[in-house]
Length: 320
Ligand code: SF4
Ligand code: SF4
Image (tube, rainbow, N blue to C red; front, side, top):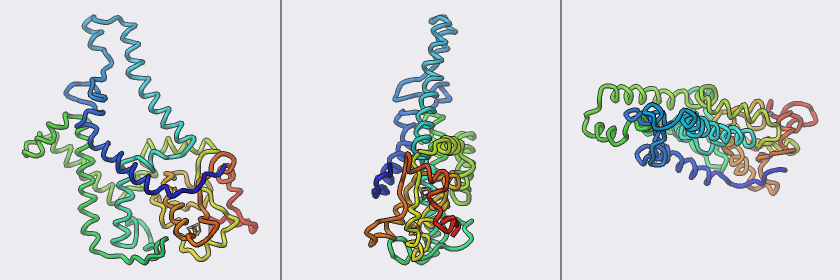
């Protein structure tokens, strides 16, 4: 059945912010990290080892060691992977759109770049319309570059620092950083990491999400395998309502997709609902509401096959 429309953006922003904070504080709080100096994971404050040292010292038998490897090694990886794939199969790339700390940066930098130049990325051929879905006119203001570039650099540094703290004792890194006493390898990791993330955040952030991220790719593949999975559906019977609109849904999409199209052309959709929210704002005075909504089960099948988005003329709405 069709999924009832809600304004979900606020909850999504809170979830994204919460997960981003968790991503940064998980190592110093020992929630999750791999300690290279100790040679094992730390999960919820406790060492998470395969117990092979005990086998070598003769404290446990070989069958017990095999059981340890299965229970502490394969099983957790399998469970996390299965949960991610099942969620994607049923609901699409929810992890990307609602939690991923990279996608939070994508959306933040997109918004700032659009404010600065009218384009959400430097690869956009034309500036997007100044008229926003809520009716406001927002003209580009070059001064926003003074915020965009330093913020992208700050995110890049935070990402590099966080990744390093997943591998080495976090407080040692913070102490070395504050006292300018990083080791050569630590300084190189932070320097090169910050540079690479800065290039990514400034020039290739959605390209990475679309083509470079294995977690995203496997979610997309699982989602495509289920024609009944949650997907953004377009009410083509009301396509006339789009004539007075400046393609607000297309303009709002952080992945630069066209939400009124068939599912396989939305292969990298992150279920972020930005397009749905944009249309709800455009159609705020329309008693029938927006033309886009989440659909699933039987309602999702036409989106997967392309039948529902073709008006009588046979011309695909997405090709307008
Ligand atoms: S679906 Fe909504 S937001 Fe998209 S073009 Fe039509 S009216 Fe505009
Ligand atoms: S198509 Fe809509 S839900 Fe999917 S990524 Fe674009 S804006 Fe988000």
